[in-house]
Length: 213
Image (cartoon, rainbow, N blue to C red; front, side):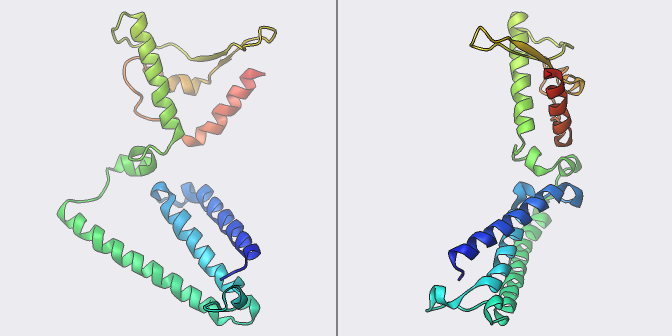
C-alpha cells in the first residue's frame, strides 16, 4: 500500500509511459485493438512495479509492507513475480480460448482489416471514419434533394463557409485541401471505402489554418 502522494506520482508516471507507447504504437507493427495491451497491460505493469518501490507499512499496518525505497527491497521482487504470474496466467487463458476457436472456425482476420487495424474496421474507434460517413451522408442527401430523389455522382469540391450570428463580423469560406476533396469526390454515389489517414490529419489541419489566414 502507498500513501496518496506516491499514488499520484505512480499514476502520473504510468500515464506518461502509456501515452508514449500509444504514440509509438504505429511504429511497432502490431495491432493493439482498443489499446488494451498498452493501457491495461503496460499501465498495470508499471503501477505494480512502482508499488514495490513506494509501498509503506504504516499505510496499512494489518497487511502492508515497506517497499524497496523504505528498506525492504525483496518487496520489489515479489511485485515482479506477481507481474510475471499475471502475464503467464493471461497468456495461458487467452491461448486456451483462442486456439480451440481457431481450430474450429478460424479467427484470422482479412489482410486488409489487419493492415487498417480493428479499431477502425470493427470498432469504429476513429473520429476520421465517423466524420467521413457524416460528410458523405450529408452530401448524398443534398445531391438527392437537388436531383429529385435520384442518386447522382458528382465530382465537385468541398468548402466550409462560416456565417457569424453577429452581423458586424465578416463571414469567411475555407477551401478544403485537395486530398480531402479527392477523398469524397464520389460521395454522392456511395460511401467512401476508406477514411482520411490519421497521419494526414495534422497536414490537413495546417492546410485549413493557412487557407483561413
